[in-house]
Length: 244
Ligand SMILES: Nc1nc2c(c(=O)[nH]1)N[C@H]1C(S)=C(S)[C@@H](COP(=O)(O)O)O[C@H]1N2
Ligand SMILES: [Mo]
Image 1 (tube, rainbow, N blue to C red):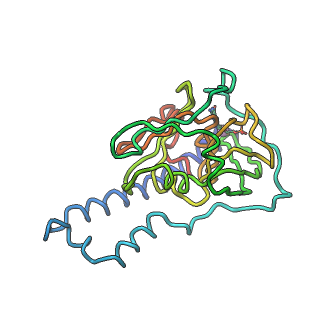
Image 2 (cartoon, rainbow, N blue to C red; image 1 turned 90 degrees about the vertical axis):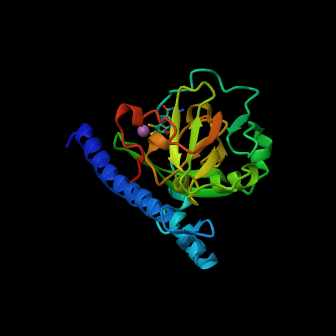
């Protein structure tokens, strides 16, 4: 099988599963939303705390974890994809947040503030749709910890997170459950050292439940959105979910 055929096969497969999950999610939500109202709340929402917790557990499920490896198994991945990395790493880099606070104001976050959050390490595969995979040792902060600290919620389950490079040239969209997945990390270290420019310094995404295309390097802006954000590779016909 050629690389192209293999890519098409995998993309089709993940499109089928991702699409089915999305349909199920959307129709389940629609069902919930359209239940007979009583006291202003659709009745399934009044089943109380236990039901609500169950829904959260299902939505932000930790059951589907990407495989992890021993630190000694980590290797340097080939630098791949330079879109949005043309300029030198900005000396005055800071992260812009949009739509995270109730007022709708933007928020600026520095690397020092990100280093101050609980550090997470993860050894997992970076898988490119070109057909290669490399075990990488990531260091950074879980996106969910970041969102809890800087987001002024409440986050809606059917929301999205958009991320883009400082120049806006590369951008990815994530459904909120994937962004909040326990293995989704805003990474500032690769294999025990600070990220190099070609691997996305000062901050990139490590999201091992998705293909490499979603692992955006050099993040400049993160947006909380209620509609699906634009996505560089999805615009080219690749599966928007890009999971496996
Ligand atoms: N900004 C940016 N991020 C990017 C890309 C890119 O072109 N630009 N390519 C993606 C692809 S296709 C892959 S496989 C991974 C590769 O990460 P690496 O260069 O650290 O190995 O980065 C992803 N993130
Ligand atoms: Mo890739």
